Amino acid sequence: MKNLIVIVGSLIVAFAFNFFLVPYGILSSGISGVAILIGLITPFDIGLMNLLLNLPLIILGYYKLGKVITINTLICVVSVSVFLYLLPVIPVTDNILLSTIFGGIIGGIGIGLILKYSGTSGGLDIIAIILSRTSNVSVGLLLTAMNGIIVLISGAAFNWNIALYTLLSIYITGKMIDNIHTNHIKLTMQIVTSKGEIIRDELLKTVYRGITITEGYGGYTKEKKDILMTVVTRYEMPQIKKIVRTHDETAFINIFETIEVDGTFAKN
Image (cartoon, rainbow, N blue to C red; front, side, top):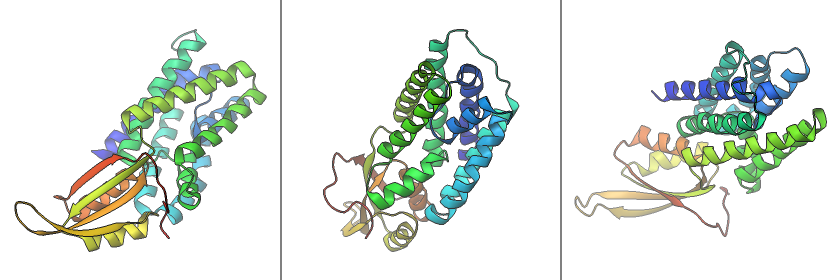
């Protein structure tokens, strides 16, 4: 079911690109935006370019982020690339501003679904997550900086009107992603489980975050429980939830916003 939702999300993204953004030369965020740029100025197909540009990053993600997130990313990237190839490029409206707004909204809905059920949509997400784990700079800030470069390239390759429309589209897409996925960059996850050691070991292997463990017991059953607390980025949350549910379907997971982290955010 999760993979089906990711595929549907990929179809929505490709629809937004080919029917709203690509006809007017408006770029999206991330590697897809680079693929659109190359497709507009060369005879190469945008779907094929999206796949080729993402493949090295997927391989990098396999070694740095683990098998689960890599498989999820691969499903997403292949799906988006196939749909970009199959769907025709037809403008729904002759108004570039409407295309920018609705392309951003629809694309954000698709990417939001992908992130919610997959954890990453590939491309710059992978680079940003890896850099965030080693630099303690937020994923959101890193993505903003990299997307800013895409906007500058858009302005240099076409004109600054298109660059501003690209900026507006990226902003709207980001807002829609936040509404569907989560609008907090850092989250605190509190996991109450009877499988604490197993979950701890796997989290330390796959997630570059520190974990604090305390002992507790159920107020009703008085059964001994482990309480795991960790601060993560929103991009890591789905992966952690999957790990916990794999080992303990009855675990209690409490997720809440983290306003500020003062101290070591990444695992030592």
